[in-house]
Length: 117
Image (cartoon, rainbow, N blue to C red; front, side, top):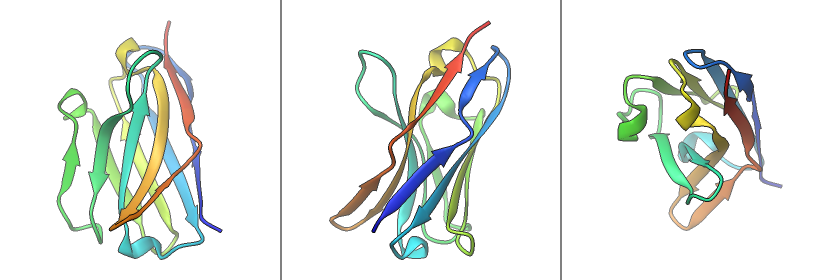
């Protein structure tokens, strides 16, 4: 059974930081491209960051997040991470973990990140 379970979200003040995590199970984690997406109320889901196979493969980041987020993975622990710094209210959204390989496309349930004073 494929599972992607996000953690680390919550309420943070503007300028603050959060580290999201995603625990994966039920599939060959190391052979999947992993990513984070987010969806704000009334908006479409959008890419935050992706990371390819093995931690040395180049990462991609959404323009709105460049310089403020770092995506990383630990294949031994089957974990995906997203370090987010200098958060602003525009980053408020439901954040999703994604695993993709060919036609296989898995999603977590999402975790809420709220940036507010």
